[in-house]
Length: 443
Image (cartoon, rainbow, N blue to C red; front, side, top):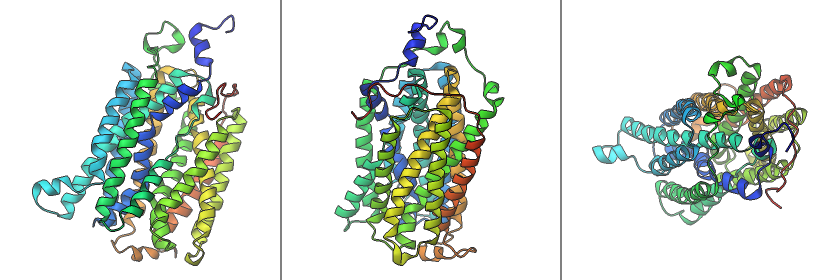
């Protein structure tokens, strides 16, 4: 500890140990699994059970809007009252209860004894909104805790893989081929919730509640107003980079299953296998990045590298003919690396933005997540609405000569990657060079 450094500051400067990282990372596993299922399979599931693409888009949008508005208010409330673990537990309970109804039968339809398309849309939209409220509360609580636990940025970039979801999906699609689509997705939801809830318990037991920064006598930790962030140019730059990164990952994830099944005409198991390959590569790259000594120029360099990889992948997706569908396995490897590079560095940029201003960290994460969720919801609503028919083959022609899924999976992420790389290049990030983890995540 330096002579002019308080014990609190010295503790904050220390990187987290292996046990702390593992227990903290487990707290987002339920969110990771359900989020992967949400973006990868929700639109496919809803159209498979009879909703039109436009109605399915309404369900997706209702969930994203509920998520977005919850994050901003949850962030403010957590900044005021703290108790992050209590918020996390409450949000996790909402997620576990509502998620099975999102991927189950229409509850209001059963109660009313009718299966009208309007009632189905309202029913699925209601549970989608409840699920996303819980998801948002859990996410903001979890992301806000890490800045209050350590100021060492190397400890903030641990990525919890979503590989387990695709392993579950592949198993269910293989073992339950003879049953209905509804039963397949219902079992995926049940197993995912059970597995994720176990990790939530590990998080709650193994992670200590951060100290009450609101009552700290250190003036540097006094409450920070919203206006402080709105006056910083870096806030808008980080917000744009983070939002564009989430558009890249979420829009591509939402259209991936459609693309491999209907555009490339690959086996149905590929809608679990291709995402699994992407996440294996993401996990591998993120573990490598865990040992990186982050600095401002390195953050921008790695982010730009990921953006370039996505631009190349997007070009390949747009031009890939169905007869060469096996090339998609190679493209998925590149996408996995690109996703990890962009996601890890963009989240680390959020940490750089917050810096030592810990008493506003929940607002920063909440407000950026609000923009992210609303933007993704609108983008997916517009793209899915263009499909216009439950006959997915009618989706194969657009005004530009490409399918909506090919356009959404290839062109949109590539364009967002290009724009985000330009914004990242213009950033004036403060130097964040710190020691790497004393105890690496994987020894």
